Amino acid sequence: MSISMKQVNQYYGKKQVLQDVNLTIETGMYGLLGRNGAGKSTLMKTLATLLPCNEGEILLEGISIQQRKEIRSIIGYLPQEFSMYGNMSAYDVLDYLGILSDMKPAIRKERIRTVLEQVNLTVHRKTKVKAMSGGMKRRLGIAQALLHEPKILIVDEPTAGLDPEERLRFRNLLAEIADQRIVLLSTHIAGDIEAVAENLAILDQGRIIYSGTVSELLAVAEGHIFTVRIPRTELHTVKQTVQVITLSQEGSHLDVRFIGKQHEKIMEHPLLLEAAPTLEDAYLYILQEQAGGK
Image 1 (cartoon, helix red, strand yellow):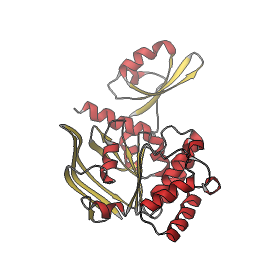
Image 2 (cartoon, helix red, strand yellow):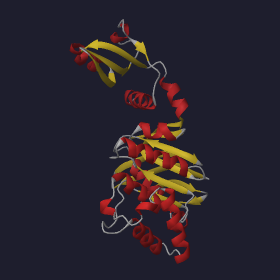
Image 3 (cartoon, one colour):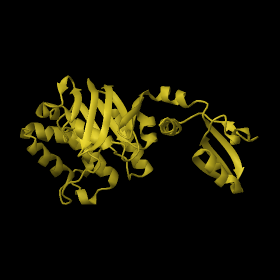
Image 4 (cartoon, helix red, strand yellow):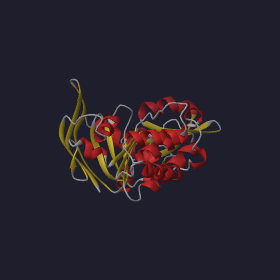
């Protein structure tokens, strides 16, 4: 299974939102990481055929994105905001969507049973949407996207607003689903990708600025992530000098994690330590390097 994008450009009026996007995605979990406004949702909507492709070529399983009916038969899509009538139950939502998709009654009934079990909502099949937690609604969203057994699942910012426990449960669910299909996960939360995907791309201002494995990205940031313990009174000066990633308080001092370069004065600090980069560190480092190169 594969998704292929070549020289994809998208516009809203005269504004260019995606610029020369080239990507190849194969079976398994694939992460699309980028800040809010980077163009992730536009790319997701384009792949889901909700937006026409202005320029370039997109093939899903060898089928041109222009063949919308064929594409929609092989994809499932969970948008950033999934909502249904509040008085409908989980079962009613799936039944209604199955009817709209012209699924035969016997097949529809069996598929609803299967996907409710898959997303752990069987005991909540009669629960109304308005009574569901955020995590349950996201799982119902995945259930509707899986209803017709798609080969490709497109998921846009699925964990935004979820508490840590629900986020973990949802990430595990996506990892299980990705075993036999492509799952394209769009997010601005690096931890969501680090936990479940080995391959990713970073989108910034409509351009792909990195594509490869998580391991390769971490290697790029090696030697650029540091920690240092400083008095609280020095924080303002440090923040003006380097890009601070995180802060943690230790009594009257702060432990500062930051992106550093050899020429910066703070690199001479006696309490400076080099740190092994996380995906979030590497992501911020790539963004900083991209901004510095402009």
